[in-house]
Image (cartoon, rainbow over all chains, first blue to last red):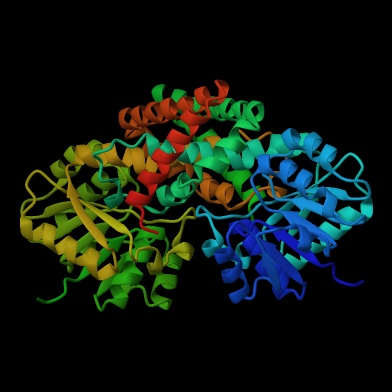
Length: 282
Length: 282
């Protein structure tokens, strides 16, 4: 099968990493960004064959279009681009929430064009093409969400793209289930890291005392506030439920502490050790 | 200055890593462990020059004795060993809590022997000599706590040891301040990681969906329950205060979410980003 020609809209950390990975895998990749400066960088680094600030001419000659923008930008961008897409084009996204955008995105789809919702579980705390790096995609998880009318063949096209970029585990779930799980595995950890850092007393000179555990837990407290406030609010009910579940467990530790109950603490620690070892093999 | 001869009691992750690092730095190191099997491993790997299951003969010919055992074992062990220590010996520990043990340790000290409380901010989730590795010490923080009658020269002896093992930032604080800070930078992150993992719904097949953030935040949920229940209970009031401060911040996020307040969320994220970037330069 001939490799599809791919246009990537948005060359930030995720879009740029996609571009670099696909170009390295032998795809013809076009890039679209807001500034010619970004396009020049992407070309110079061999991430794209060509590109520009106007998506239309590139999308019109592509088999796959990746909209690597913030969640709320996907549907409006697709609407603007719709007249230029050829029938048979597969469009995909990288947004971290799905239920909220699914309907609007599908309504923006022109006749004969399919949409495959995708969420690459990879990224970095920084933003912009300077922090794009195909290495962050390798071995990462990749989530596919089938749209209301998405064909199996369109799903396979995006799955193949993910494989060729080096994603390791590719799973398909519903938009609703995606958002439930992401509320727990991604958004809750970000909320926790932010709260942990914000609960530091300002005078503590924390940096002199931290070990790896604190460093690891707070890495993602350095956070893109525009993107993540959108992600949080776009998945509000799921995230609140995850926060409440977590708070109950933290209170179980607090209660055991307050009661001086060593057995209860040990039981909670054994449970977490067993679970952690089960789902992370490293 | 001649390098002191060092006996390390307990060749687990921390004691074993100390032994390996000090031997590599040219020190004469003796090791004491509960089994001859551990001693044989330590010798074979060049971590110690000699050793055995009885500390007395080795401690008696050492300038520095490191008690690398759990916090509650330090004072009892020191009491048993006291008759064999030469005047001028400096004894130190690696315990993660200080206020609780300080008085009992100091009462166990024989005439002419000094104690320097120390807390290396390094370790691993696993236990035992097989997971000892001097590399975990390199670049880590090291906390010194001066005892009631500790001389400057004894402090300098342990500081030099820490430097030679590769610790990067060595700070001195009071036992009380140590425990306050550790409740926040070390114990709270462990409580959070445990609660996060324990709040997972059992059926979620979480492993298919996790990204680096979840992996990083939960690494320490795999936890030595014997040691950490002792550490938590031995620093109960400080840890409960840290949990409560953290919970307030998490609730601030939850409140902003429930109110749909994007500005409030962004402000919390900006604050955490600014703080994280300030105290962790990487």
